[in-house]
Image 1 (cartoon, each protein chain N blue to C red):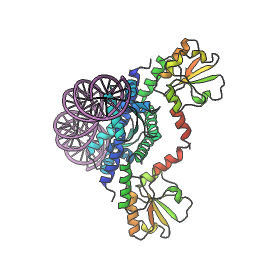
Image 2 (image 1 turned 60 degrees about the vertical axis):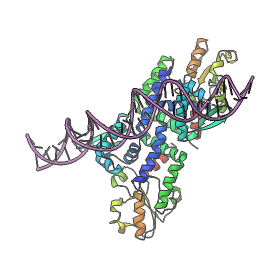
Image 3 (image 1 turned 90 degrees about the vertical axis):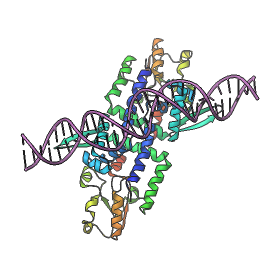
Image 4 (image 1 turned 45 degrees about the vertical axis):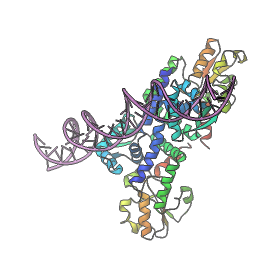
Amino acid sequence: MRSRTFKDQVYDEISRIARAISNPRRLEIIDFIANGEKCVEDIARQTGMSIANASQHLQTLKKERLVRTEKKGVQVYYSLASREVYRAWTGLRDLTLLLSPGLRETVEQSRIANDFGHPLTLEQLSGRTDVCLLDVRPEDEFQKGHIPDAVSVPLAELEQRLPELPKDKLLIAYCRGMFCTLADEAVKLLQARGYQAGKIEISALDYELASTQPA
Amino acid sequence: MRSRTFKDQVYDEISRIARAISNPRRLEIIDFIANGEKCVEDIARQTGMSIANASQHLQTLKKERLVRTEKKGVQVYYSLASREVYRAWTGLRDLTLLLSPGLRETVEQSRIANDFGHPLTLEQLSGRTDVCLLDVRPEDEFQKGHIPDAVSVPLAELEQRLPELPKDKLLIAYCRGMFCTLADEAVKLLQARGYQAGKIEISALDYELASTQPA
DNA sequence: CCATTATTCAATAAATCAATTGAATAATTG
DNA sequence: CAATTATTCAATTGATTTATTGAATAATGG
């Protein structure tokens, strides 16, 4: 008979996966490495933790098979074990946005602080010819996957590459998504130089997920 | 500027929701009350915990707005705050089934112990006229929602109601889903009485989710 | 082979979480 | 109003988790 020990095993096992993703630092790691494989040092720098601490969190994720590792020379590169991991993260993110007025407010206030109105959506842009879509993430993340028709202009290179950009078009930046600051900074720089600029909050990953989900 | 404190707030808030669902007992509670509102005593009995313990877990879930309460007379009835909560739970369940050979093995061994082959799927049943679909959950859960064409025969009443059942059809039982034991017990009873019986592992909730997701 | 670099391991202390117990609250019934 | 019942609260204990620190490992380049 399917007894209590069966249920205990089942819910225990699922809760172990849940526990592995239930730490803010590890959520940030997942959100970050979803864009492309990163080594421990990248992750530590991005998240502001010590290398030892980052490594420890990565081990926790690895123990539950949420991330995979690949050794390249001296470095170990971490990436998500499968697309489903990213899907679970976005599910949790969207559930929290639904349930938590606090999170919605935090995001809203950040928009106000950045002097944006509501970011545009992809639908609002589709079909417009006066728009140039900029992927301001590092080039390797762009290579791994990007929104169709986007141009790779990493934030770090944006200033030097301003001459390449069309002056008569609306420049729309995007980055790693809703919680990433790269597009904000790009827009700020562009507006300071007199360009018409804005952002969308969807990421390349969210775009990909949205286009594969119905299938 | 979107600073570290912004990210800290964001990931903290999301991790609080994750933490709330990252306990095996609370997962079991979510899985249970998804079928319909239940009072603390129901929940304590179903999960085998003390009433005080169950209440404490329910408070944890309520603090994060995952469950809603309604007072009816002396009792407080708990149910999921929204369909999205159930969706997140199934997402986590399916991710774990994907990532964890241990969970797959536990489920598989339970099937062997119950002497079933692989449970049927709804697709295999659709269109067949020699099949009678039995919802063996308590009646109130059936009332709240069920798979089309199913008949409500709660496990507790099954024995007395055997005469109602068609002897010439294949009786397919379903219950609260993959981790619920009601259908197993129903099939065992039916087979012992000489009926052709089997089960499907999809629940009324999974069915509903699957049919609303594409929309 | 030594020095360097990237990463992981191990040990600790502070914080948080879970289960248990018994008391407190609050509505209902006689 | 007293007794009963359902539920929640509060305090305790033991177990986990987190961040920090410093040492250990392992691969590479000179």
